Image (tube, rainbow, N blue to C red; front, side, top):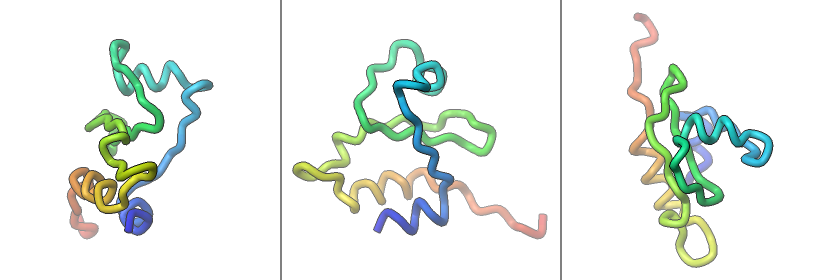
Length: 84
């Protein structure tokens, strides 16, 4: 299931592309062709790790939870020792 991965491993931020076009261009680049929706994964410093169109994560008319989970697992941040 996608929800536990997002809840436990990521901070989900929904961005309105109409009101935040400059932010999208900053994260994706001036020449990027956007599809909607799409996913942008940032590191802890706000640096873009990847941008992903979501069409390839669909099975028929819906997003396939297995494909979305697989994509997210690729980008789960490395665990750090809380004692350090």
